[in-house]
Length: 191
Image (cartoon, rainbow, N blue to C red; front, top):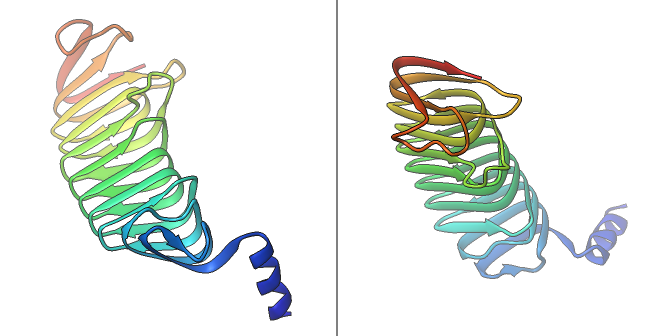
């Protein structure tokens, strides 16, 4: 039985354990544990990915990714933890960054960072969930922001609740920090 599973994994170019030292060996698809010292990770990981400096998964990270400095992924479904920075193009789950958590193309879940929590540089992406950091920003949001400074524009079908010192909710996509914004201290709500 074990021989059949191992043989089928080789045929599909999937390995249970992958190690990254500039590139990922022995395969670009890992299905249990990925270990990275430095450099590019595998195309996809289903399971646990542990990295010292960085670990970039080019297609998907399904499971838990923990990296000492930079956790970077194309698409995460699960948990992403970066000691300094956590970056995912698309995120569904929990994203933690010691300094910053950034997701430019959409977030569903919880995003926490020491200084900066940012979602949606692309106006089509929507942040659905919770952001906690000193500064929270979202171009299109449906959820809650908790921080010292919060900025958001409610999604077309969404709402925003902000708790913080400076809370700004834009009224439309053409708003700037100085025009088209409604600021409220402590609590701000918009839809």
